[in-house]
Length: 451
Image (cartoon, rainbow, N blue to C red; front, side, top):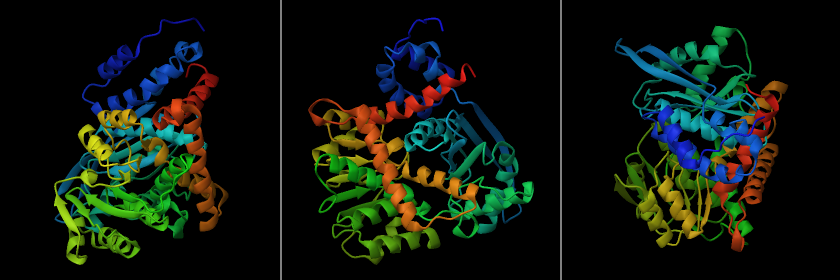
């Protein structure tokens, strides 16, 4: 290929902004990756001449569609649905479906872009995708959620398949929603196949899937500490969120001898100086999944805890932090407060929960910082293993899957260390994850030619 002029990083990002107006989350995600990739590809003409980064930052396709459904009062409701298929160079598109009022095309494009690198890091044959709707399942009856999911799948089924695109759950999409969508897919197509992951155990789901993202984030944290001859045992942790990821992260921290001090939801956070032990975690799981209550109710049940309305937990003094709620929930000022309070390691259970300013604070302070594309890859890794089980019509036991998850997270950590090593023993995990994830996808794209 002919040698091309290399545009600088600022010019590249300006081009991304120009092509994606009004999409700040997507531009942020591309910028965060590009600033590391540019250094790596500086002397590698094959990536420049083939415009690999430019191509990865342009989704293969974005499907947008109308979702009509009827509520319990017989009102016709209209939402918008999307599926973003970012890149399938190394396998079928793979990524969750999110139901939340904050869902926009920008948010889903950023998530699909991040998912491309995260899936690459697992070593499994999965491309990157993401989907969802601005539908809010909170406050809806089971019948309303069912009707919405069925209408959503009536359009989505045309664009997915076990060898094409395999969605999973995400915020607002749990076992209930996956069940309704899978049932509709099966009804429309007359095929039982592994087209969705996160299914119930009774109909093709995998052991360890509910625990995988939260446990995986803690395993990555454990590997970071072990690399510095340290451990979770005896340390305090602040965690955001109170859903599936957060509660299982809290569970694993507790099992490893740590003390969890906080959990949160969109209304505020709870601080329990006595520690949120396993019995309390089980109570929160019941509150959130069965009663669908608010985290503030914790303080009515357990004395000594305090509720901080409208606030996030990052001001609480602790050794470890795990942001497990949503994107951009931790800004530069909060990151500085955490560093000043002695936080030594951060492992992201959510996707891009830290702003670019916050990431810079952690990087400048040289603390251990595991970005979401590496630290929370355990969930999609076990989803990939669910795909394998479905394809073979078998089911692996919890012990085997637990060992595989532990090994996968250790392998991701090793890749990050390989490409992120810096002077003085410091590991830039963001740089390591970005480069390791990019290289596999980029080399596959080179092999295909211009497609």
